[in-house]
Length: 187
Image 1 (tube, rainbow, N blue to C red):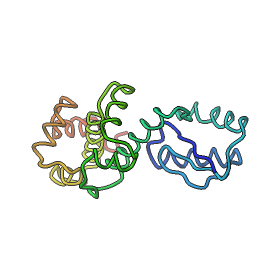
Image 2: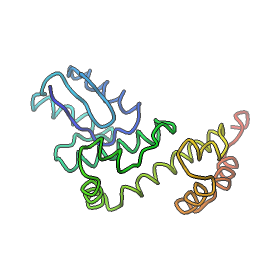
Image 3: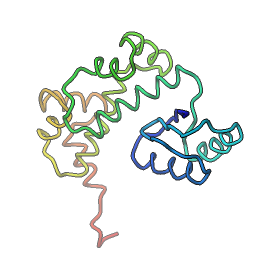
Image 4: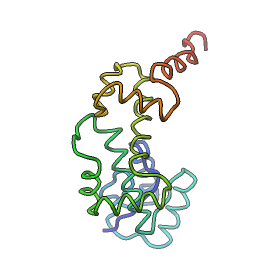
């Protein structure tokens, strides 16, 4: 068995694209998840090269060094928490990351800041705000429901954080988005 770490796998569609390319190359996948692929056997150097040649133009990259793999795992855990687990996790982010990556949070935090030039917390907030934007555009949930789903303590806290990151209130963001949309019959 062999595990490859792949940068920029951030959604289920990314998993499907990578899976498809691995299948085309005849590499048997045992398991695939965000940022990580376990193959039945170690790919030959020429197979690895072919894989990299097809993945790079699609925005993916096979990660070789240990630090980059850890950073990518941190990002993938956060993306999974924010975008795919609706209010399931009540644990502290530092605990979740420490448990998932089997490292002290201080080490992970320092490494992330050193490599990415931002903190884990800021990255987490940025992901949450992107999710809020997505949910606002869908217009299926109220702001209170969005706040609950993303584990904000209050709507006011969510609104303040949203404005701090985007420069807009959630309602102003939603209004701007609606102003830009045209009815289908007017397109």
